Amino acid sequence: MKKLGILTDDHKISNTEYPPIHLERPPIEKHVVHAPHTINEAYDYQKPSSFSRALRLDLGDYKVLVISGTASVNEEGLPEHIGDFKAQLWRTYVNITNLLEAEDMSWHDVVRTTNYLRDIERDYGEFNKIRTSFYNWLGLDPLPAATGIQARLCWETLLVEIEAYAVCKVR
Image (tube, rainbow, N blue to C red):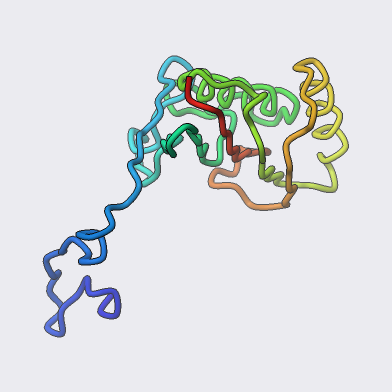
């Protein structure tokens, strides 16, 4: 923390200063995206988590939506469908769909996903079958770029989590 400038030599928290580089080059504007009817905000958890569900970046004629790892969590911040991989995956797709719709976007704007499975050997076949069915139903062509990773997720009850990146032209 000392190397980051958070703690002083006498172990006190130092005051933060706006980085001088941003006086000449302000950081890109970021807008928080909400879909409270389907998924809560992570910072509203009983044990708050420091991230936004999604951010919108406005880049001239384009907007980019960066969706954090999203899982089978409901509007109260509780896990849904404990122990049921298929149902968790479908709930995850519902949550991501609602975050996309909050910015007037759809899965047709998604360019990349990162897919985290707790047990990739056990669940990848079912994951790929459901994902393929979902993408076929949506008529996605081309398909988003994707990576599959086996990972321990933030809660033991979660079996799948997906990050997504979407880009579209501003009207």
